[in-house]
Image (tube, rainbow, N blue to C red; front, side, top):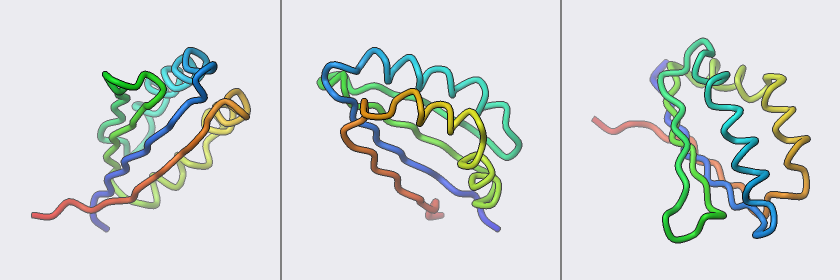
Amino acid sequence: MSKLTIVANIHANADKIDLVKAELLKLVPITGAEEGCINYDLHQDNENPAHFMFYENWESRDLWQTHMNAPHLAAYMAATDGAVAEFILNEMSHID
């Protein structure tokens, strides 16, 4: 199976930017150490601080699916419940 690239866009509610950012930052070291994680890079928009983006590469979709069911991701979801206005996730493949 080929490598999987994930682009995840998270838009925090304006009054919850600091909360969402803190919770996203907690995910970085844990996820980066997961089996199959090649990179897990968090970005924040320079013009719109409520917009965060993860750029991720995984060895396979199966390993990414394991990540999506991990307890630390469930903890993030619980901690940011009602704080995220929009979440858009794209599964992408590299074109040689």
